Image (tube, rainbow, N blue to C red; front, side, top):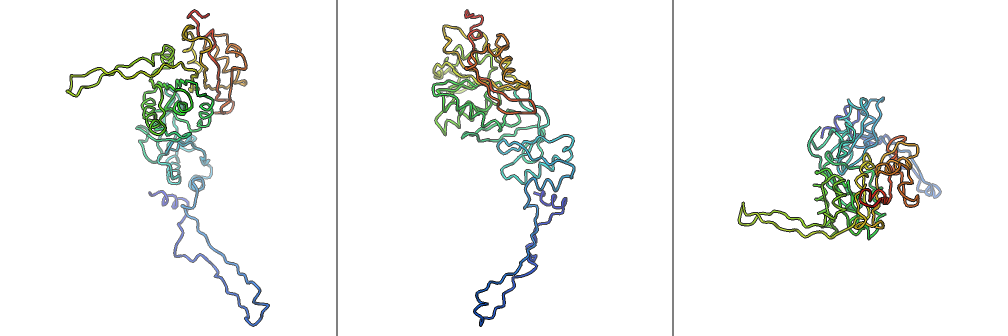
Length: 392
């Protein structure tokens, strides 16, 4: 690693010289007359001055960056971590010329970090991913897998940071939501990612189903679920790779409980495939649906519109929806409720979602000045649930 030499040369920091004399004056022994009893009880002191040379190894990451960056460049001090990956949001063009040096310093100074990346594009697309550049460490600069493992709330999650969505800052909120579920709840996580809500929910609820549109996320979820089962004995009741509308329709029809028929090879060799029926999971009526897709959850609420029939799903069994959404409105609670009601085909007012005491709001965090991430929780209104199905 040449970074210490590079930084020392850039800022004039030398490593301590082990042969150098680190004191300018040595301890002077007191001269006391042993024949004078009064002098033998006195204490003698001398001032000792030490010269301490601080080298690169003595500096924190922030201190090293202050030395190496021009004085008019702001030192980046905040970043997120995803397992062994440090994720920066550097300012452009201010940091452009110094990005790789910043990454090298952080890689050298942070012992648990193996890769430093900088976000170069906006979070978006159907899978909520973003373009990134590897500034230092392992991984291709602009492409290729960045597989890491993050630990959150007692569970390990393996994922490819480039191809799936992960935000470590939401760990506390995810725990709070999971803690709100009861032992008789059946949870359906419609936008589950690699499982940071679904897997802990499986430990506290009666059952948990997980779905995501991103096939990469679902592939890692299956690995995480298998590892979770080995350590806890708890497994997800079902994992699907569908869009939210198809998943809701399948769960409402209890399609997830049907037997699946897999084709497997016989020991006799190729061309002797046989069919084997896997045991069907038990029938479950989901009681809690989670939609953790703040950019699009409210639009996806339309998948519950007319999805239920009254005979199979009486009003008392209609599920509670927990939808996350962004709002820039001065009244974010009213804003998200109004948009949710409209997506369900109801009059666009908060009252359309039900009695005020049954509709819950939470300002999760401010993601930007005047922009909140919100949680809206409500039971599917009957007028929306049975629309077109003989209910209204």
